[in-house]
Length: 247
Image 1 (cartoon, rainbow, N blue to C red):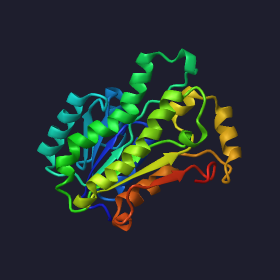
Image 2 (tube, rainbow, N blue to C red):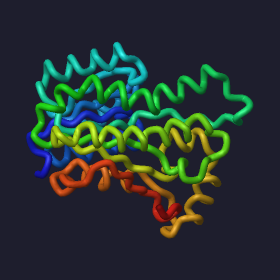
Image 3 (cartoon, one colour):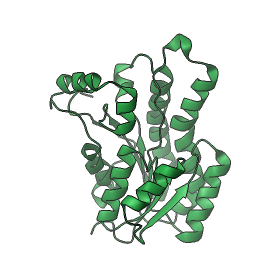
């Protein structure tokens, strides 16, 4: 299996996309640290996966510097090294611009943009121990469309692209690659709780591939970027939205 003896951290691991990524890495032989700030959802993920020995579940808040360093300490104590980091945690409320409070703006930016910075900085010493480190950041296809009512989210996710490009230059000397994916609107429980099903169907009709996007559609790209096959790809953004945007 291509990820045997690899150590992987996935943030936002209990969500629809995150849990799909965790499952695939486990199925391909990886040791996975599933990180989420929702205790019940994280515990349920562990139950659903039958608590395999290769799974380490840690509750952490990616927007908290203290929490990220605590996460790093626990991982270092358990594994000593990290090979792959998937910065997937996110928050995506829909609020008209004039109704966005500064507190909401800061919360959304703290999770979606500060989070990848804080987790990466905390985990970096362990990641440097890998002979072929990988960082995959989850941005969003909303950066291409400028989705209305999500100005804070779009801004933060656009920032993730800049972070990815700059960090790729910083970490290249350590043989660490840094890339991003931009998912389209994905059919997951959190999305369905926020958007009516008709919106997902409209998105499907706007794509070249006319169906709803699922979490499974994103997993292959993440694992490719984490694999040896992507060893010479860094600083890039791969759009995975079924042909809604051509970039």
